[in-house]
Structures are given as C-alpha cells and as structure tokens.
Length: 173
Image: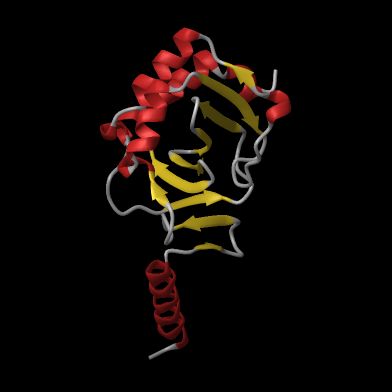
C-alpha cells in the first residue's frame, strides 16, 4: 500500500466516524463546512407537528437579513413584519411535510456563506427562529434546536418567494 492509499483510507475512516457521531466539522482546504444533519436532541422540521403547525398558524412572521449564512445571527433590529400575502405564500411553501426532505442528508457549504434570510414565527404560545443557507435550515423552536432541508421540488418556490418578498434583506438594498 502506498502513501496515497493509506491517506485515503484514513480519510474514509475519519469521515465514517464523523457520520456516526452526526457532527459538523470544518475542512481546512478549501473552506467548506460539512454538515451531516441532525445530532441527538435535535428536532427535524419535517417530523415536528409543532413546527409545521406554526408555519401555517403563526400570528406574526418577521424576516431579517443574514449577512453570512455560515454563522447566522438573529437580527431583531432589522426584522420586518411580513404582510398577509407574504405570510400566506410562505406558509403554503413551508407548512407541509412534503416541502421538507425526509431522509439522510449532508451538505457541503462554504465557510463564509452568502447573504440569506432568517425568519421569526410567532403565535400566542410558540416562537420559532429559522436561518436559511442554501437548501439547509436551522434554528430553534421554543428554545429547542431544529434542522431541516427544503425538498428539491420546493426550492424554486422558496427562491421565488425570497426574490418577491425578501429582496431587501438578501441584497441589503
């Protein structure tokens, strides 16, 4: 066995261990983040009745900019309350189980991600904050970590929604 084969086997073993642990790691070159999905104690959006219900029944939905989607932060100072049409369109996209990928997934994303949006859903008893990055979504529902991945069939709808209703937050203009 030559050095290249040994190095490749070591990398495969290391990735296998990371997959088993469900962890997130950062590769040194190039600058990509490897996200292997939910870890223990994390709710998957497509399996959470509370999350799906809140998408459809939120009294208020706010959108806010995320300047770097690889390290998202809630930005209440720049949060904007969505109007009725934007809320209805968003609940139609996100509020169904079929809108979310149900399976094993992992994402490879640049460490310094592009601008994207965050959403804050509020009802009388619940609050959910979501951060979008590519098709991946992460956040909290009443303080518990939630993650999900938009199903490929809904990605274009969500991107069209962002262009129509959240252009200011994405472009910064």
